[in-house]
Length: 193
Image (cartoon, rainbow, N blue to C red; front, side):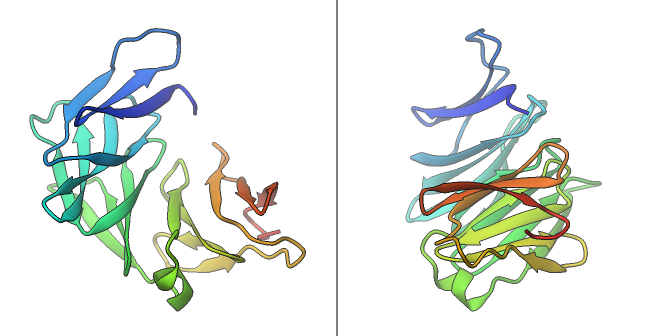
C-alpha cells in the first residue's frame, strides 16, 4: 500500500515508514553476506530478504517477535511477499515455492514453471496483496496469473506489445500494472486483457 519501504544496508534489512520519519519499524541482520533482494509487506512487522551465504543465495523471513529470521530455503534469487505478510513467494532457476504462515512452521505450495520460465534469466513472481494469486513474468511475451491454491493459470495476452518484463497487482487485486518494451499497461485480472 506504499506505506512501508524495505531497504538493505551493511548486511541489515529495515522497513521504514514513508511518513517522513527515519525510524525503522523492523530491523534485522541477515545471516550470511550480501543482501540483494528485499520485499516488504503492508504489515510493518514482516520483511522477506535473500542474501548470499557461502556460494548459495538463501531466502529469509523476518518477523517481529522472533529472535532469529526464519530460513525459507537456499538457491533462490527472487522474493515477493503479500501485502498482509502471510504469504511469501521464492523463486529459483527451476522452481517457484509459496510459503504460507500457519500453525507450526506454516505450509508450502510448489507451483510449476513453464520451460520458458525456467530458462529465462529474468523470471519474476509477484504476489497479490491477499497472497491468493501470483503474477509470473519472464523475458518476452510470457506473463501469466496463477491461483496459488488450485494452480489454475491465465495468460496475459496482447500480441501488439513487444513484451512484459515486470508487473504488480493493484491493492484490490482486480488490476495489474505491467511494464516492458517501453510501455506501461493496466490489465484486468479477470480477463487477462
